[in-house]
Structures are given as structure tokens and as C-alpha cells.
Image 1: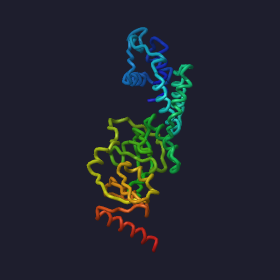
Image 2: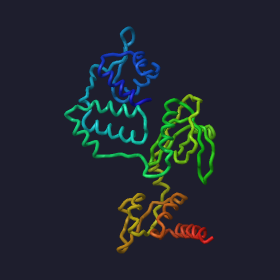
Image 3: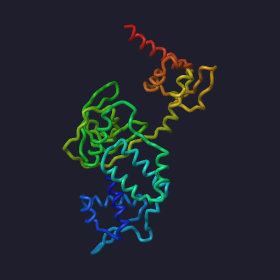
Image 4: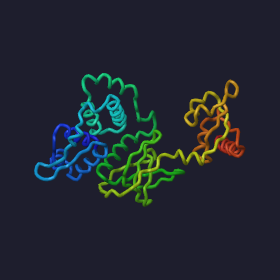
Length: 310
């Protein structure tokens, strides 16, 4: 469903009293069925569109709900522009650029300067500082496959470096914690999977179409689960890495230990990911307790040292 088409339909309904489904379909070069889905989406967004059948019938915004450009407050337009601007910076495409231009057309001249000031107060840049340069092109390919309901094929690197060939029906792009993922139905696993784009290679759009199936969106909020499985361990860090440590725990968990160090109550799960976090701080971080985690840290450090000794 294209963002710019929905915005355009709303603008047409604002300017015209009534318009038929076939006329809208011809205008946007889609099927009447697609137009009906778009109207449903507009209704779900809170803009009541009613339909009239017969000669001269069509869609119209309910007369008691006449919306004009003033319905958008300065805060509303600023929020919409910030969201669209952040997406156009990472996901290229005419539909987002057109949607951005059309939303700007709602801005009255006497509020343009104020809205521009508020939009510029927050800048959202989703592009990475460094890393896999395939992410941008892959986003474009997945977006195209989503729009056209086409299969995707790629090689995927899973745990322990295992690489497998996958054929997937794409259903959703997800940005989580600065990483892009794709939710799709994997033909190899016969189930829905969440794939991290940075682990993909040789991504190709297939000519084969697929019929979208019912699916549940992936669970992305694990706050409650983490509360039950995380434990607190005591670590001692040098002040030089405090800024990095704040990415993992709040300032309230830091207790000064002399002039150069802090004792930190660190949320920890006994798996590779969390051990790697502690090891990434090098000699600026020491696990004090519990004893078995401290011993495991010593063993891993000795294994690292053995690699260099050999």
C-alpha cells in the first residue's frame, strides 16, 4: 500500500464532493479492489469515508466531518514531516518523496517558518556510521518485493557462521535497535522468520509471485521476558569506558570506587552475547561476582591469549 496514494486520495476527497472507485482506480492505475482497501485504511486512520451506490455514487468524506488544512496543528505537521524525512533518508523511492511534498502542501504560508523550525529541532538519521554497504540496496529490493508480492532469494549466515540458501515471502521491514530486519515466510523452514539484513548476501528478487498468507507480526518487545531471565552481576570499570557502559545500564547503577573507577550493577544473561559485551571492554572491565561468571570470564580470556601465543 503506497503512502503517496493514500495521501493523494485524502486530498482528492477534500477537494471534491464525491468520486467513484473506478475513476480513482483509473487515476492511480490500480484495480478498484485496491482502491477499496485504501478507503478501508483511510477509515481506520480516523477519517470517515462513506460510499454511495448507483448512478452518481462514489466515495466522499462525511459531511459532518469536513476536514481542511487547518485541521493539522503545527505539532501534527512537524511530527509527520519528521517521520517522512527520516524514512526518505534511508529508503529511497518516489512514493515517499511525493508524500513528503504533498504533506508540505498542507502548510499554510503563515505557519511555514514555525513548522520548519520545529522540524529542524529533531533530526532522525537512520543510516549507519559504517558497516555493510548492501543494506541500502537491499532495503530497496525488499521494498519492491513487498509491493509486488514477489519471492526473494538470498544466502543467510545464521549462528556459528552456518550459511544456507533461502527463498522467502517478504511481509514486513523492521528497524529495531539500529538494525534492519525482514519478517518473511521461509520456504526452507516452512515457518515465519525474522532475518537480519546484514547477514544476507546475494539478495535477488524472483519472477515468481506469491499469494499473501495470514501472519502475526514478530514480537519485538522483550522487556518483560528480560526482567525474568536477567540477573545482576557486579563489575568494576574504569571511568574511560563509562560512556559506553551507559548504553547497557542506567546511571543509577553506577557507584564511584575511588577517583578512577566505578562499581556497576550490570544486567546479565549467561550467553555468548553478554559475555562478548564484557570482553569488548578489555582490561577496563573486571567481573567481581558471582564467582562462576568471574571464572568463565578468566577462561575465555585465557583462550584468547592462547590464540596469540600460538
